[in-house]
Image (cartoon, rainbow over all chains, first blue to last red; front, side, top):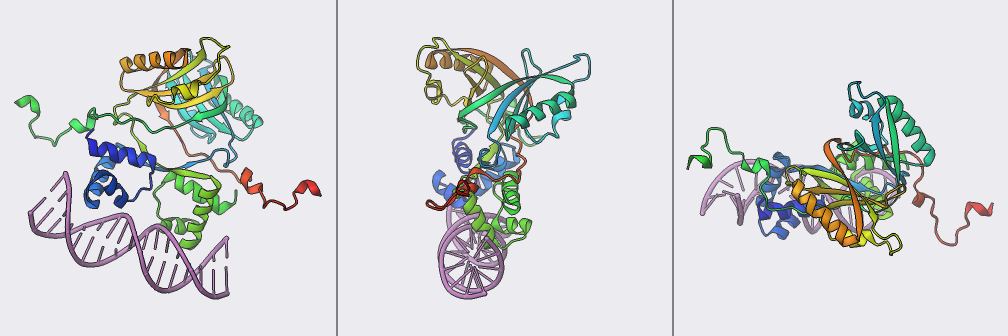
Length: 167
Length: 167
DNA sequence: TCTGAAAAGAGTGACAA
DNA sequence: TTGTCACTCTTTTCAGA
C-alpha cells in the first residue's frame, strides 16, 4: 500500500474518531484529499468500519477462555459456526488446522456462566470441548504494522483497460 | 449498567463514528445529555477508545496463527510478554491456565514469515512454541452482549462515605 | 441529570488546477 | 489526484431547571 494510505490507516486504528482535519495535518494533505482517500479505503474494504473499544471488566465480562471444539460424530456435516453464532458469549470463531476443528474465544461473567456456555456449545453443535482459561491479558488487538506490499485490490483496474502485460 | 448507557455502548461498538446527533436520536435524549454520558463512560473506562476495523487480507496479513509458548527453562523469570512486545506480528498475548504459559495470536503475510516470527519468538523469550494455523475465520471480535449487572466502578463511592458493610 | 441555545469547528460537494 | 471555497451539520460549552 502507498505511504499516505498507510499512515491514514495507522492513524485510524490508533484513534477511530480522528477528524479529517486532524488526519489531514498528520499526513500533510488537505482535508478533502484525505477525505477522498478514506472513502476509497472504505470502498476497497481496507477499512471495514469503526468500533468503540470497551473494557470487558467494566461490562461485567471479566472471565475469558479459549474453547477448542471437535465434533462428537465427525461423519456429520460440520456447521458448528452457524450453530454457535447465536451465543453472545462467543467473541470469535476460528477454523483451525491441528487436532481441533474450531477455536472459540469466549467471554463470560463467572465460572458458572462459563459452565453454562460450555454446555450450550456442546449441545448446540454436538461437539466436545477443551477449555483454556485466560488468567490475564498482557495485550490484545494491537494495531498491525502496515507494509508497503500491494493489497490484492490495489492491482485491479477498470474493465477493458489494458494491463501492464500488454507492454 | 443502566439501560441508556448500555444502548450507547452497544451503538458505539456497532459504529464507533456515530455522531452525537444520531446517538441522541437512538437513545431518546438530547445531544448534550448523550454527550455527557459518553464522556462519563470514557472517564470510567467503560469506553477505552475507538478504532478502525481493518481487513487483514487487504493489509497483506492473510495468515493468522495461534502460538502456544512454554519457557525452555521454567526456573528462569517469566517475562515473555515484555520480551515479545516488540514483534509487530503479535496481535494479542494471553496468559493462560493449562499446559502452556501464554497463547499468542499472530498475523503474517506468508508461511515463510510465520517461520521467521516463530524463530524470533523462541529466541526473544527463550521458549518452545506449538503453533495452530487458522484456516478461516467465521467470525471475530463480535460485539458483546451488555448486561444490566453493575460494573465495579458503579459501586465506588466518594472517599469517607460509609460503605454497606457499616450496616 | 437533563434541556436548549450559541459559538466554534468539522463534514461535504462543486469546481479549478 | 489535490486544493479552495462556501454551505451545512456537528461538536462543545454553558446557564438554568
